[in-house]
Amino acid sequence: MTPETFKSEYGIDARVLHEVEEIDPENRRVLVKDLQSKKGRWEPYDRLLIATGAVPFCPKVPGSDAPGIYGLHSLQSGITVRNVVDTERPRRAVVVGGGYIGLEMAEALLLRGLEVSLVERGTQVMNTLDPDMGALVSKALVEVGINLYLEESLEAFEAAGGRVTAVVTDRRTLPADLVILGLGVRPNTALAQRAGIPLGVRGAIRVNDRMQTDTPGIWAAGDCAESFHLVSRRPVHIALGTIANKQGRVAGINIGGGYATFPGVVGTAVSKICKWEVARTGLQEREIRQLGLEFATATIKSTTRAGYYPQAGPITVKALAEKGSGRLLGAQIVGIEGAAKRIDIFATALHAGMSVQEMINLDLSYAPPYSNVWDPVLVAVRQADREVRSAS
Image 1: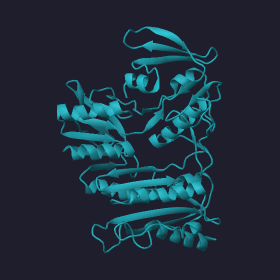
Image 2: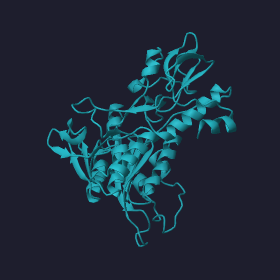
Image 3: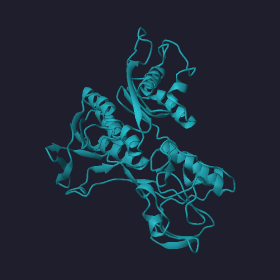
């Protein structure tokens, strides 16, 4: 979308290569710098939306400023890495961090023919999964040819000839022509903080369900803003494009004079590493324990299609439910093609506040190319219901 398209189709004055350096809430104005002319000026506003997104976390270790180290947080940063792979032809890549970005970049680089190593300081990759489910993803990484180093902490980067040459952990030194940082992101809220706009969890901008901040006339949406978790009933910060889009829509309606609310999230996310799909929603075990709730778990193994049907493959489903009430608290899935999108059933049930017993008789579709007669989701909630009952 070019500025010209914004102007001709929507009547929006989109100014690229401009940076807001200061917000003055008292006088309702922002200080804008033209990055080409280097000139600054104050622009007034009636209503202001802060949508500054998130920034990748980069650890302060020796050599972290060496060329050849990339954090991914925007379309342009992805284009930059692709251009480096195309033009410089690196042979060895090291990915630091085993979250969504780390896994997806490891897959992309592997498919481009690079030797890929992934370093993760935790006991398993994907810390948004429980350890037993994360172990399945770790196994899948090794299976597709990625060199996986768990329980290793980043200590430094080595450089020579003006660019990175190695990643140093507390156990080894890994040669690298290219380094990807997949250590997560932080809300990009320094500008808001300097303006005195109240921040909340993890330094994200505190908002109400209409995406209003505590500062009159100012709204916030996207990766820089808080969300409300519908299961834990607490504020959270989850940097996902699905959430950002919904929040932006709600903020825009309200700023434009309408009325809309954003009720909250359940933390649904999916990812992929070659043929393996990974999905999660709701709370994981450690989060449930932090809330002081007692819970039951059920983990089942099944197939993505009817077992006798061609290309049926493994799927593991884990469901977590509150003891006593049987309320669904979360779910996780690891499997091959056809596995991950089943998480949407659990996400819908979480939004509806359903118990695992209520889910058992959900009228889900069936045909051998898509599922067994008892879908793996239903098998998991049946088992969870039995665990809840036996614990009561």
